[in-house]
View 1 (tube, rainbow, N blue to C red):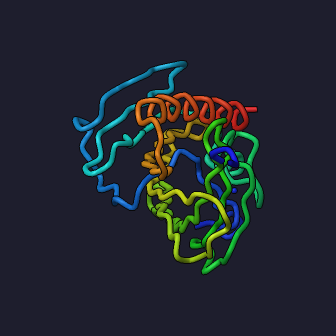
View 2 (view 1 turned 120 degrees about the horizontal axis):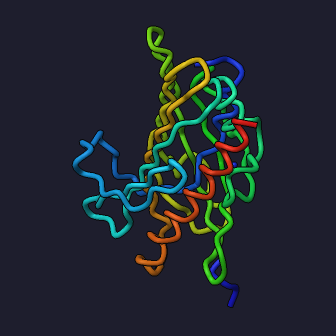
Length: 212
């Protein structure tokens, strides 16, 4: 038996990635209060929080950090073009399925999961918007499995939100909330633990890339 097996005109395509990546069921991530979140880790000024999602054994994960770079540099590091960005460690491949507008697209990802889990795939719909006054960028993410036919993988479901807020000319606050259901029979406790570890690794790499 086979083992359980990637606003501003110009970066709409870049939001072909998701972020990984760390993903969730079709449960909508309504904006919970800070009191709903439990701080799990605080490493090198990167805070990782979790919260229980009704009807799902998988926790939602929020990551919060500040990056010593311009918003433009952070955006470039996060969304560098088609394909998997180097900081997204679980992204095996990605391609843009359709660009609706400068701030909306559909992207297909294949996720590389550790043995003995099978690789997963996911179809992500993303909508980006920028607040003209504050310059705050918000990207809303939600999987749309019916948009792309089955490719022979176990298909994950996910939703989330990414925000980039300018604190000063060279400091940006990143907040990312994701909840992902990888589907299939998985060890819930291990999946929740590994999601925290992989999120910390990804954001650490992203911050180093943006600050370089």
